[in-house]
Length: 72
Image (cartoon, rainbow, N blue to C red; front, side, top):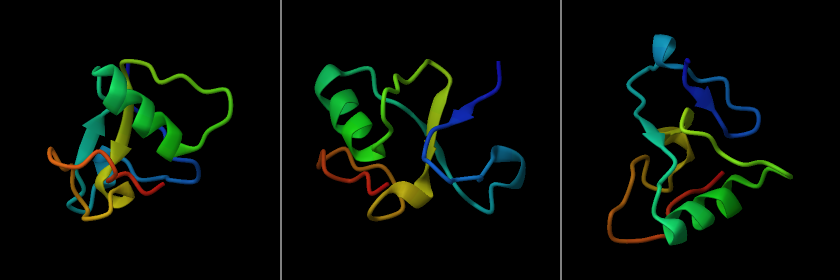
């Protein structure tokens, strides 16, 4: 199954990535819930194929230090 990009209104894809990086939704419960809250989609549950591109991160990339980096 192909990746599903989960930010509302985002039409970036790996085929036209423009140097973007695509991240899996975390499996860690605390990080996962923070990502879901930041993505702000009603009645949505990510799947193993859900991805978020680097355009939706404060610094344009994933941070292992802070949990407040998703800016959807």
